[in-house]
Picture (cartoon, chains in turn blue, red):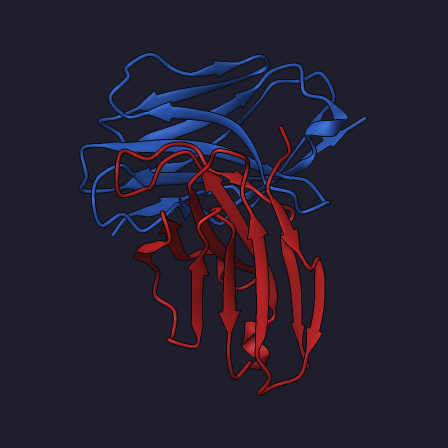
Length: 116
Length: 116
């Protein structure tokens, strides 16, 4: 079984600041994917960024980037130039790519509030 | 390309009744996964279907079941509803099955089920 831990239940930053959300995971598998999802008040789950575990290069999508530390099983999300629309719950998730996978395993989430 | 759609969006049922939720994946996606989201337990994996076959199943009682049709549309059924089944049920689609080198999952808007 795999576990995902997000240690920050809530964070608040000013608009335009940079914020980093933490995530650690535990898995015995070698092949897996990591994701960050955003869930705004509308409850629509939106994929923010993905990382394949076999890739050493950190993924980047516009203002969003990750710091993937495979040995430490850490997968943090950095949001640069934060905007009011970034206010949402952010979930870190892990997915095995081998047989017998159990779907996405999610962390408990971090509620990010961007203040004007 | 249209996103994942779920119907109905809101549902109110009474304890003991049964309910069927529907999910239409993104065109071309053959894998459909279902998740339950509650304030207490967070996001939990229910099951995944690929090519009309259940590939993976989470730790939920047999009252929770599902199926997938030849056009990849999926339904999930909950029988003998309990108060604790009140939740947001999310459906996600992906190109391939999580048991076969899976990839990112795209979520629908969810069905909010309230059991009274």
